[in-house]
Image (cartoon, rainbow, N blue to C red):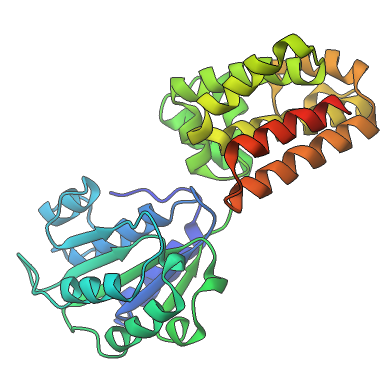
Length: 320
């Protein structure tokens, strides 16, 4: 059976509503990236398509194929950019097609908060008169970007961050070593998807490299400028992860500097680095470094020129 980690209250609410035959034709699942929206949507799909009496059984052909992401009557749409009126027309055609196998199909729309206002207005007609054999599940990080007229036609499930201990226990349950489970759960911000990404060896290499580069940034040597700039350029596609690693380090250095308690640090495997940098960085400098990183992150999120933003970041850090 599909396991939705840490969202017991929402699962219980869904099952109670479903067992009473009160499910809507359209849903919105909202919550932070990595919290489990896609997994929840597939859990819902397995319930809707399950052929057993006790749904979802997890063992019938439909449940297994939904879990393996190869059921022909579960259509997942994951746009790379904003979704406009033309995209909605194409989507509506898919929604109005008949199921391939059974008497129902499920359409999962990822990034529903990227549908433009015009696109949402065009989609209203489909939501007002949905095909009786189709369930529409929209996933959104920022539900505030979805029109009230859309939301009023959907059942909404909000997924939240979960306790760190639950993240740790889940990692241990999938055979992650306890020390790593503790580290990655600490760094996960209560989001199971974050912890799972950290298991990737490429992330662990990136984290080690970022810690090394951050040390060079705060102990600035002009000879390192090009090397540091090249690191950021090479990791342009992972820049959000790089900034998050740096922010967590600054947080730990500040915490250790003011409490001298290692147990309050998230990056427990980097405690020697944290201790050393806490001795050379004042609270004022730490606050300024954090401000520079957050400003750069925000500018890049707003589509500022990447190379100019990184150059400005490094020049600003020289002045700290």
